[in-house]
Amino acid sequence: MKKRVSIIKFVVYLAVLVMGGVLFYLYMTAPKHGVESGPFYIKVDGVVEPSTASIRRSGDVYTFTSNVHGPVIVEKDNVVVDGAGFTVQGSGVNGSKGVYLSGRKNVTLRNMGVTGFWYGVCLANSSGISVLGTNVTENVMYGVWLNEYSSRNIVSWNGIAVNGHGICVEYCSENVFSGNSIVDNGFGVYLYYSSNNSFSGNNVTANGSYGFWLHESSNFNSISGNSIVENGVGIYFLRLSEFNSISGNNITANERQGIWLHQSSNNILSGNSIVSNRYGLYLSLGFIGGSSDNLVYHNNFVGNVDQVFIENATGTHEPPPPPVNVWDNGFEGNFWSEYVDVDKNRDGIGDSPYLVTSLKVTQYDHYPLMGSFYGLNVSGYDVAVVSNSTIEGFDFFKSNSTIKIFVSKMAVNQTFGFCRIRVPHSLVNETFNVDVEGAETYYVNYALHDDGENRWVYVSYQHWSL
Image 1 (tube, rainbow, N blue to C red):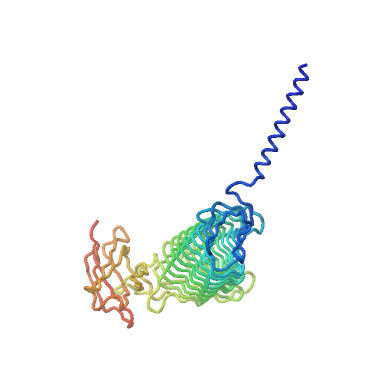
Image 2: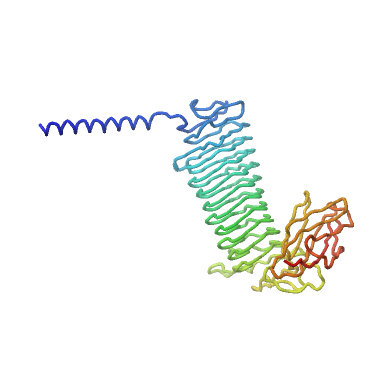
């Protein structure tokens, strides 16, 4: 009797398990509100497919109404795709593309998350595309990928983080990348055979290999006003990447090189703060030489283990001559934190040149700066200041032709400070006065130099006691 009861209990228990499994399967496979199964299309005729997709159309604006699972493929020009804060979610399938545009024109992608794909946002042979306010995270290969001659696109104010690599640009030109946070990727930005692109105001931080990597004839690009901090290498030019401009960047605490030029010539490096890297500027050569004729001026080289390092080794082959570069613009050079000299004529320039290297060919910065360089934008005008104080602020008053500079001490025990100022004639009516706020003026030279468009002024002062 007891055995029969046990058998009945076992059968009931087994039936419950089977029924539970069936119900669970039906639950998992049944369509649910807010969960989509892509791919999703915005077709050339404007129709959204499938019709059940959580994408609402209003004229030429397509707005997400919930998260979607699977790729979004845009086949129509002149539209806006607004994520409304929702996310395009993938499952890491090899080759998958989160948001994909091929051969498109004048499309805006904005305000969405894209995560879990092989490539997050992919533009192929597309122009006039704007990618704005989008978080592209945890994609296997590239967060944002521009390829196949995509041009004149804008990628701005996006968070591009924890991807295999952040931004990849291949065979593309005339694109603008600004205000992006490019953090904790394999490399931050990679260019391959891509020219005339602009990168400005981006935060490029903690990328494992490189902040920027320009490869194989990536020419005439502009990298300006970016924060390039704590990457493996800050900026790397590899093989024949020439005529690029690197200006006004904060290049700090990168593990190895701040800037590394390998077989890349005719670039301009100006107005950068290159601070606390293993190597500030690293120059290396290929078998045919290179890394020569670069113009390096107005940079602040501060506290790098090696301010400039020139690698002249090229394997077993006879090495070509070391690279010869220009370390000043014929009038002003760079600030070198270890440079110690006098400035008897009081012009903000050291009286003796700074020895950059004596490797086979001795090279000098002939006009080393006695203080840090500050490039300021004042009401649309470029104003330059060299000072051994910290510049806290700069203002001007046309009503009484006065320039006011706010300074603080650069060193705790610093008694005297100076400013060498380049002022455009069009900014302030002459003759103008310089007022150093918080410091007593000691010496002023209003006729230091004039090139017809700008006037250089020198002022020194005694810091107020703390």
